[in-house]
Image (tube, rainbow, N blue to C red; front, side):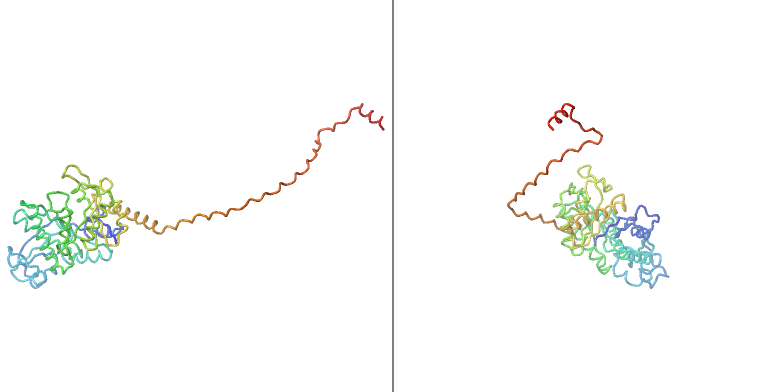
Length: 388
């Protein structure tokens, strides 16, 4: 099955709640949506008296994401599944799209009823090689995004892995691979294997995310899903992927690394300098979706196509239209009637000469009704009398 949807609540949606966005996606004929978890507002406090004995996921009007004995200790993921105790410290989130886990459950039920598949994008700013505080904050934000994704029934926690460190490129890749391994393991334990870490490529050469790095990470760590973000790869490799053979090889690489399914992010892209680019509406971009639509029309695996274009749902519907055209051409070509056989050549035969038809006697001309008949002259009459 193939699904199309926007990266966020549709721009045309009158309501700005998450459930309004999911309903609007459904009414537009789309079947996917990437929820944007961008602004993070954590608050750490002591457990209240009325919360003692309750599970963190059952506390009303609270999105609890961490529980610990002290504010500074590393939170144990198992503590999220145990009743709260006195003098424990809890960290909760204030998120405009949901107020508690019961709210997330209602949104999950709506998405399933409308057949809209959800994924969730973690905060965009990630830095594992800055200060210790920045590293800890980046790890925790990706973990918190995984908890929200689990509450929404989303299967992917999409993220970048941030800038390279100050050392060699190989050392940075090794360290980031270890962090990704730990994050995937954490998600497996806390969400019971329902949510996986999805790593995006980056269009900036100073950020982790070349084609080779993302694919190698997915091959090394079981469970990690590589995201085929075509505009970012186009900016990174300075290629428009207009060659169908080259594009087919790229798609096959990501399908193999993701073990059968494909999560694809698409928008228009324009290049400016050696490292400068920007995302644009699809019709204005240098990378076209037509060749990719032809490849997807031939696929035998599931695909989710997310529109990250500035036009969001408009370009999401346009991507779906291009795919349906490619699918129609494929179906017409496959079910076209066989060509008609050429007619058999006629057998050679001796021509028979036909007798010419007999000529009919010439008809005597009839006198004209209004023209008088010529009479012989008088001398002729006398001669005729004399002969008698």
